[in-house]
Image (cartoon, rainbow, N blue to C red; front, side):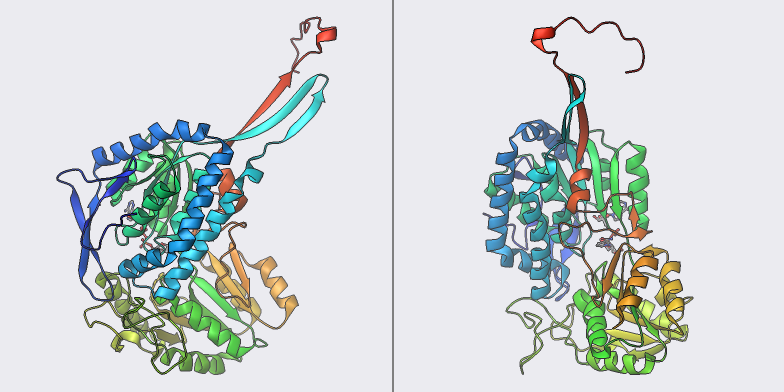
Length: 516
Ligand code: NAD
């Protein structure tokens, strides 16, 4: 398999080959740990997008007609190749996103889980059969692929988020156009080449690079039957509105502000470890990151002290395997990086500005990451882990999705106040409760209005055979990603009612003008 090198133009992938139309606009791709421009990704205009969508539309009928056994064999081969080569993919992710190598490997593994789930899709595509539903009449159901589906993904999980969708879409018999983030586009090309090696027919999996113009082409095209989007809330809402206005099936997963509630009876060391891991892992650039810690009186002082101690010990640096960073491990004298840089200089500057706004609004800045001394090139987009205490819900650091390594502690007097805060937030992606009381945890599970809940688990990303999705402004559309909901999203149902009169007593049906 050939992979694009970091200095190449990053082209589209269509009909099993790179596609670089002359005169394309491009956007620079950077390595966030060095600040260096490493590539130029093509930005599709409408004709380029039409070419890619047309290839998918041409391939879709043949793939839909391919036997289920053959389709799942190819998915299984893709899983074997991915498992054998996941380090290559993780390196690509680190080089464009900045997350440390161990975290990138974890991302690939979580995506691989969905591939493994899709290998068993036959069971979920089985229809029902009801013999003799009426005299001489049988009824059966079947699920069929939709045709071409568009997947539009964010920068923060260049491999896992596309893999929430495409293994199931492909196993179900659809053709895919993936529009990855222009900030981290190379993982998609690597995955496309892996599909080819696994034996997927050309045209079934295509990559369309670009920005709003490429997205709009997918949303408007009559050849695209469904769109799976993951990204920020304003764009998710836009994608949902525009694609559904064109009659498409849409699932649009948006932003988040995830609260972790710590009750006074919780194990405070467990809670502090969880808050630091979930707040600063991947530099806070995870839609399931904990960004608000809700400390229920009277544990605030003690909990903040334990979190601050751990936060000050984190190493921020280049996360490339074999570089100045490494596997993100903790022990040892030659300590490796726990956390990498932010994805772009502009994003780092925005997060630093929000930290300044938090200070100006009167929050207590316990750990300030702005002066971090990174283990890595000074030109990287660094911002160290930052901890605020005494944050109130009117402050910008509470109301904004920061998407960086900034953890805000809000103190509340009671469980009821904690619940009110979580339920009053416009986002509803993930939340967690830390407690030693099973009854309190159960009550929280019943009362909280959020899609994914952790009990003593800070990042409750569901396993592949359950479905991933938030509530409120974290999801537009009603279908979550992967699991059985994913299978339903990428297929549609037919119900067939059949009458075969018994040849021994065939006597015509007789006229029946009433409703049967
Ligand atoms: P983004 O919304 O900027 O971009 C997402 C995708 O939309 C990209 O492919 C981008 O090219 C495209 N896009 C950007 N602006 C557009 C526009 N105006 N019109 C049409 N398309 C546009 O998001 P991002 O910065 O790449 O990713 C971070 C965001 O994604 C955060 O808000 C995070 O919470 C969210 N996210 C959510 C989940 C989830 O499961 N809910 C998972 C991962 C990330």
